[in-house]
Image (cartoon, rainbow, N blue to C red; front, top):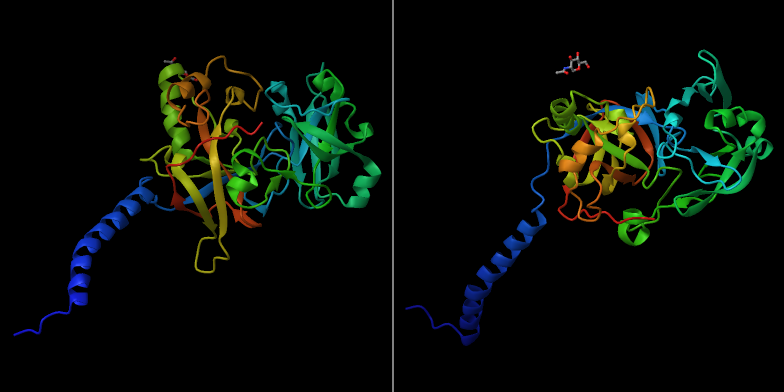
Length: 357
Ligand SMILES: *[C@@H]1O[C@H](CO)[C@@H](O)[C@H](O)[C@H]1NC(C)=O
């Protein structure tokens, strides 16, 4: 005959019989809530990298780029502003800005900026500047002045008009070119979903609208293009959305990026270096800029805006705008290449756009 259990043991057995199922239930429901954004997607790869040295001007496709904590090196470190107010100028006010083409010569580390000369069919406006100027060069050729981007003022260097004056005719008004380098001047702190109390750290950028980087997916553009083809016999290039990092994505799961939260990029192959980690802050809510063809600066009256408005108003924080692409902040600097492995390491059902300005 088994010895009688002490009253303590009896209490323990009764307690376990009651608590174990309850705790198990709580554990599983919590895990389900955590995974309500669904399983992680298969890894994919980076298919293109774009830098846009001057805000709103033509972009450059590159095979590799240096990643800084503020974004890709040379991406949106320059910006045209009004004079004398130093307020930012974008495609939103002046679609022809996309005809201004910066090009980069790595051998001489020079940025050359060209634009079609007004009232001429073959002449070009042009000037060249150091792509990574020293502080001594800046002190000699620029003056310090804050520039206004949205409602935020940030310290910049203003280039001498001896370089940029011919561009006044292109804009049809007096303008200035400004530069920002995190190593010389105060940073432009992130706001919106990138503010320190939300992101969990201090981060900054140069002249993008909101965040250091925009990630886009080919599978989503392909899905959008099937709709544009049906609606208006039209297909568009992803460059209209001005992404920095383009990934292949899963062709059977377009728009999966809507729930991506944390990303890891690592070189392919057995000798891959240290992976880079990115925090997605929010979806990118779009204006009508993608209606402008960056090659011609022609603006389509309807597309893709009308189509996007029909099915991509998916963010509760900004229901009056459609979304394409995900905005993100790198955790560190490094080197990033076309062909790199691209993994989503965390997904979320909690993305909600916070207007920053
Ligand atoms: C669609 O556009 C292409 C060229 O852009 C043209 O050749 C074709 O005829 C158009 N189709 C229709 C149905 O309008």
